[in-house]
Amino acid sequence: MVRKEYSSKRTYPQDLLRNLPPKQEGKSERNADFSAFALSLQGASHVSTQVPCQDYSDIRILNGCGVVIGGIADGVGSCPLSHWGAYIAVCEALDYVEERIRSHEAALGDEALYEVLNGAFKHAERMVAQAADAASQAVRNLQSTLTVALYDGSNLYCCHVGDDGVVAQQQNGIVKLATNRLKGEEASSVYPLQTGRWEITKVRNAVAGFVMATDGVLDAFAMMYPDYNNINYSNRIYYPFMEPALYGMTDKKVPDAAKKTLDFYRKYLESPGYRGKVTDDLTFVAVTSPAVLEKSVHPEFSVDTWNAIEREHERKKAEALGYSIPQGSSVLEALPDTVPEYPVRERAAEPVMSSVRRRDGLPSAREQTKKKSDRKSPNDRTFLLLIATGILLAVLIAVLAFFGLRYFRQHDKAGETGSLNEEWLKKETEIQTMTDAENSSKIGNLLKASDSDVIRETEEELTKFPESK
Image 1 (cartoon, rainbow, N blue to C red):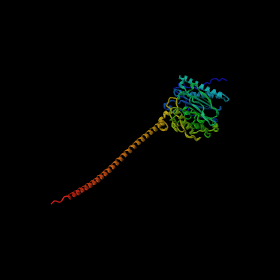
Image 2: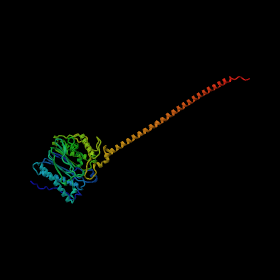
Image 3: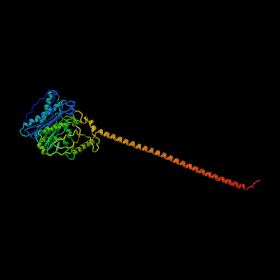
């Protein structure tokens, strides 16, 4: 049966430049089947430059349908009206999905749901274009990403374009990205809704809950690395970051558990530690079925394994770029701030993490905190430079000490040699004096002996003549 085209029930101001869309600074919902919350916050860089929050998010539990839907969008930073584009895209896409789901009495199969999600994206793209035309604006000024998720307590369907993402926790304890990061050739580029290059996926195994995030949050706990040793790290999800979001909403003793968990994450994402390193707008959505989650396998996670894989990845990347990292070292920044302890479950210490990428032309988290990280990070270039300088100074001191010691030893030997010469000269003088004295004595004796002989010989000669009278 061919269905008629869906018509939007929303109106938007003609002057989009002078008006701002509604903010989504916190929404939580809970019924007998689901718990969910959505949060979008203006980033530190946009606060300082007085740029509106370009993220938008929403969640809706469709009572009576056994379904919960969620949507997130991140406006392209270079587009002056992308905050309107994100808002319109999320609202129109969720309106479309909700209307199609409620209009069917029976549950929809996979193919029907694929058509619903595809139709929602086409409708959202069309409504953004209409709003731009009504405001006499180019459509490119309203470009944004868009991600929509549909969950029935077991099956999770996603339609997605851009570098945002959905992370699913399966009932078997596996945690993985349910979407691909759709980016352009350059690291800072991204595919917006207007490219028409969106993807529809379904998580193969039964799902216990999931989270959605724009890149300002997703980059903080989901890394796209290859598989290592057949361990479930092919998507590199730092699970302790999202664990409180799902298990925090299962507390039956707290009637407003969803709101309590929302407040927990708002406090963390607004903390100076996180904002000091992640300056982008922040969107985080969490949805779970508490009854299903309680019966599911709890994911296993090792901080040591996470850090070991992180170091190995950085080392391979460094080698590919032509430089090396010493064994046991890391060039990574520390996590922006320790995730506060949530009362539901005791959690491990936080790992190292990579810097956050940006696509809106503003300085990255690493660039904005370079001076701070230079003082604190033991593995950055400044620290290596200090180490190299210290080693050079140590070598210089050692060389000077060696030559100085050698000089003083030679000087001491010269002094000792002079003393010995004087001693030998003194002894030689004494010996010579003694020799001269002895020789003089012998000569005197010889002279005395010679005189006696002459006198005796003379006397003998005189006796030969008679005495004269």
